[in-house]
Image (cartoon, rainbow, N blue to C red; front, side, top):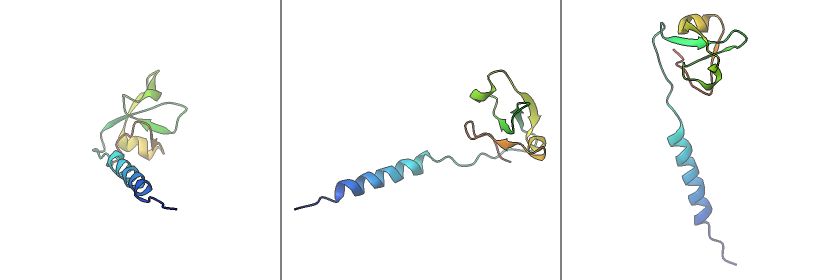
Length: 80
């Protein structure tokens, strides 16, 4: 019985390449960059984030972080 190992190795290599290329570099910003929060939430967002359908409260990035807000994983706002 002959087993071809090239195909599984190729699939694994291509999967690793896709993951490597799809990873985004962290976004950096100045402390006075504007981000958006919602009253009941604990995350801060970009203005274009889908979770801000009804609008958000504009706040500086440094204030959002000092108040304990975390960056949204969906829109990936600046972290610092």
